[in-house]
Structure formats: structure tokens, C-alpha cells
Length: 309
Image 1: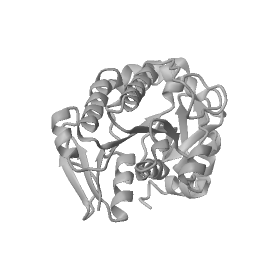
Image 2: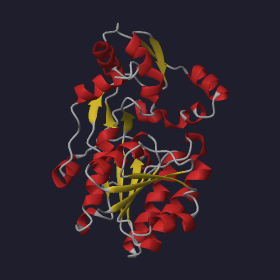
Image 3: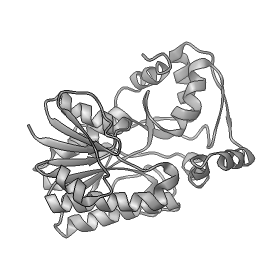
Image 4: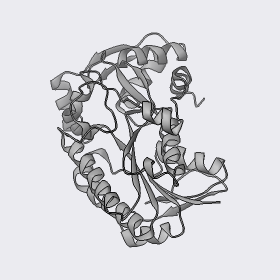
């Protein structure tokens, strides 16, 4: 059995660890508090992953490092660069294949479906952080110091996912209540099911003997819906009345930002939700054989989250 390292135990890290362990692989999940899924093949380790020496020791003998860790949203500018540097340094020292979980922030403004070969053109601080992380990793790959690839997802969707929709709209949709959303309600968007994120990460890691898979980005196969339609579908699946949705006004968003530092980070990303924001994952489907989970099944999972179904 190969050994795989998963850093981070949020919804994507847990899904990735479980996917690997369920097929008989050994998994070491590394988080600051030693959290992670309970499984006979999962070892949970408490460690500071920003310490490259400690992390390199934990990578000893591992085939693949999957990074699903991220600092709190309001700490990306200061906390993400040292985290990314530590992960990259540890992978370089140990020769471990490195699969990064990223997103589409680095592409900048929407201008048609994003393809994974597009250059980085960030227009936000968080986009610049993401772009720099990838560019540093790609430079190390091209210099022959490490094998790296990045899996890019759109907004997460799942019963346990952390995203604006899951936090701010899904609870109201499950009960037929009212919700406000800090973005457009009627622009089509790609929604990445966290199980599909895990399957894409693992599909890249499985291609350890295919050099053409490395040194590039891959998009998570995702479903497309507007926020309004997604909320309506969740309500219908939950047997609830249709929710009342409104877009946050600038004043409402400013008040939310003043009260909560996480909401304070939303304003610079509003551009994501005003126009179609779509990921083209056709290469992932064709080359890696990963397809999006049936959207109705994902909606049913989100609809049943409150009841623990």
C-alpha cells in the first residue's frame, strides 16, 4: 500500500482521505489539531504544516502530498504564502509528488469559460496570492525540483461544504425562508461538489507515471446553475416553500463586513458573481476520466443536510 499525505481536514481534505483509504491506501492526515476522518487506514497527526522540517519528516516514504489546507479567509494575504512555501519545500526535499488544491481566483475577470491553460491575471488580493502560489510551484516543477499539479475548483457544494451559498442560502432554502446573498442571483456559475474535488485530486495523484499530467492545472468537473435556481432546487428537494432571495446592498455588505472579518473579504470578490463564471473541465473528463456527480444527487445531499441525512 502506498502512503499518501493529506494536509487539511475540511470537507475536501476529509473526502480525499476517505477516498484513498476506502480503496485500501494508507493515509496520513496532518492538521494543527490532529483532526480528520476515523478510518483504520487513516493516521491523524497534529503538526504545524508551516514548518517545512516537521512536514518533510512526515512526508518520508510518501508517494503523494495532497494539500487541502488553507488559512482562514481573512488571513490569506499573510498566512497563505508561508504555508505554501513550507508545502513546496517539503515536497522538494523528499521527492514527493505534490497535488495542490486551488481555485479560479487567479484567472481574474470572467470572459467566457475558463480553461486550465489560461495565464494568471488576478484582479484581487486573494487572486494574487493564489497566482503567486501556483507560479512558485510551477517554477520549481520546471526546474526539476518537484513534480506538481494544481486542481482548481469553483464554489464548493456539499452537505458539509464551506461556501457563501452553503452558509448563507442553503439553510433558508431547506426551510423556505429568506436569505440575502452578496452577489448576483441570476448569473450561471460552476458548482464543484467536494466529492468530485477529491476524485480529481486523486486522479491526478494516480497519474504518477504520466509526466504529461504534471506541471499544469486541472479543473474539477462541475455543474452549472444560477444561485436562484440552485436555491429553488434545494427547497424542492427538501419539500420546503420556495425561498425569498435578495442581493445584499452595498450598505448591507459594508455592515456585515464591519461586524465580521470574513465578510470583510467578500467585497473584492463580488465580481465573481455578476457574470457567468464557468470552468471548462473537458480535459479532466477526457484525460483523467472524472465526471461531475449527478447534480440532482448533490442537491438532495445539500437539502438533507439539516436533518443529518
